[in-house]
Amino acid sequence: MTEQMIINIVREAFWYVLMTVGPILIASLIVGLTISIFQAATSIQEQTLTFVPKLIITFVLIVVLLPFFITNLKAFTIQLFQMIPTLNAFVG
View 1 (cartoon, rainbow, N blue to C red):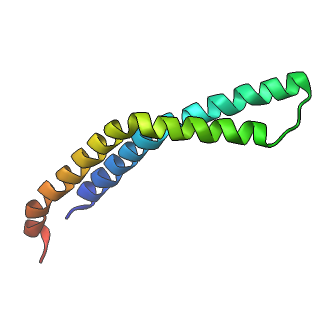
View 2 (cartoon, helix red, strand yellow):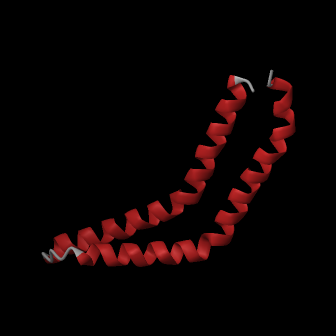
């Protein structure tokens, strides 16, 4: 296994992590920012007002995007398993 192969595997792993977690983080950021602006405009300082909507949007997005996440992670896992026979050439 060469250094370039390891770098490519790690790069693809980071890409799949970003593709999986990115939409949830972006949606949570948008909801949090919107509620923070609302709180600043109305002077409401309730902590649960930001937590509960973020929790709900995160749960809904996970349920909605779960097939997409599974497809991506399955493709990456299959790709890793298909690389196993080629790694024997680099061992010993």
